[in-house]
Length: 194
Image 1 (cartoon, one colour):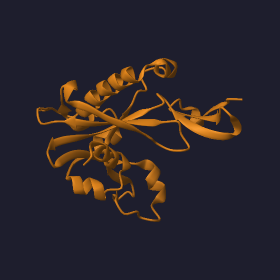
Image 2 (cartoon, helix red, strand yellow):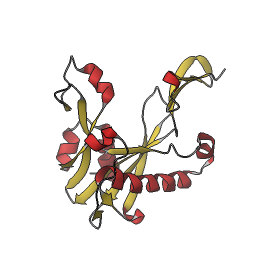
Image 3 (cartoon, helix red, strand yellow):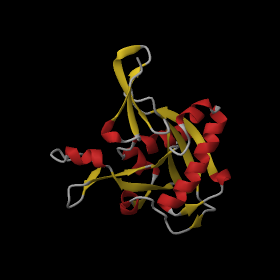
Image 4 (cartoon, one colour):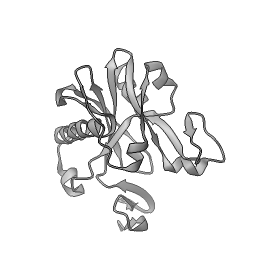
């Protein structure tokens, strides 16, 4: 039995029974997989985002190192930029070759770079570095990219949500990323051999 459960009537997250065991459940996000990227501005400087992470608001009773809490006890984390392929149907996405998935994510990174960071780059400056399994409780893979912004055009950000509008750009060194709590930006540097 592969029953699907949508929480709070949202299509963005589905909980499913495992295909080989009706006792095991896992989550599947809309679009299945996601993308994460960091923007490199020179040999040792990278742009990341400090954005709100509402699931960590619930942990307010135990302030966690690496998370900034504002006056309203909302949690903000310096992290890689992210996105999802939620505009492509799950069935269509699952039929794509790996090369087509990477091309799709390059387009998403290009769009998200303008939306969230204000960096307009050529797709040839977006480099796929690998993918990582997100969680044992999800079937999600995160496709990782480095954006070479040395030739980027800086434009006004175009946030789509209030949370994106609240986010701040943060310039980090390699050491800042290594010392951070964000696994995505660390994984990108690791994949680059940094």
